[in-house]
Image (cartoon, rainbow, N blue to C red):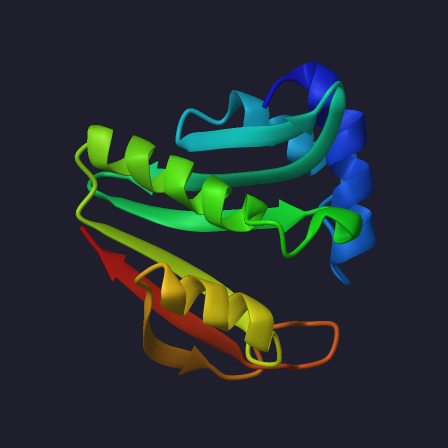
Length: 139
């Protein structure tokens, strides 16, 4: 992901999340030494993006987002695969993520990709108090 992708990434972000990151926050991720972000393009159009933070030998998946009209085409699985390949290359032992308890499609995707349920973070999401499911993938 580069600066030139940010406006399109921000459009996807705001169309997909009830608590989207600001354009400023997305821009900060580009200079975050711990962050790694990728995009999927259809021509010149960003149709999905994903990223993680790596701290020592662990990553935390921060985002896996696909534009609504491109869902159910394997793009999220491709993004996860690329993040995983980069994690392994960088010596990562574990990858964590949090997902809304109500997001059954995402939970199914992460489970299919090898993530396992670890715990629940009660009332994690500030906009509605929804719980977060914490998942882990061990490499």
